[in-house]
Image (tube, rainbow, N blue to C red; front, side, top):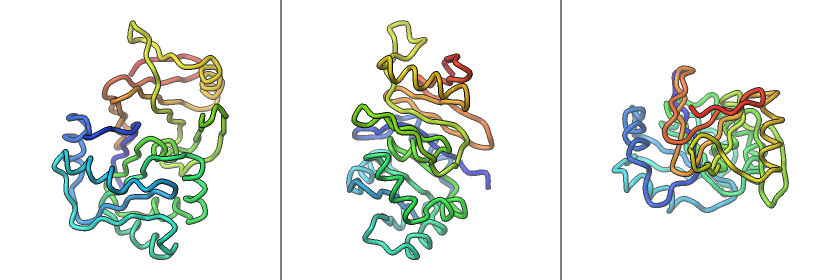
Length: 213
């Protein structure tokens, strides 16, 4: 299936205009939105983002531990759009693993899969967490074969990101094994048909080199 994947940090209040317009073009069916959470009650905040961008769905389903695994799988497989919400990335991935979310998402009929913050981190194969100043590397859902990092800062000249020395070193080392995509605040990237569309400050880190996309 030629579906679109969206990667970004969290947005406050509304989606950026370009994000919303691109999303409206990619959402060819508005029947069912499925929000995958697992560790943070984000339903109200997520729905306000869609409402502010004038995007509505006939049905909205929220999946956390209150849903059974079988019910969750049925909803995911039949979703029009899947959104992996924000929160704490490692606990969220633990929930995804416990509910065997990966198999259901990969079988889904959804033509758009969106990640916000932790959800984006967990969409890829090579997930990495920097929560609580601890580096944790683990396997994500594997929807795309790279590592994704949101919330990077940017140097004054706009050509380089700037984080702590520890984080920089970890990402540069990881880039020797797999590509690392990173976005700054209010920036995002869309992948469809193997093509990456960067919007805003998006960086590719590969083999120790950093390139602004």
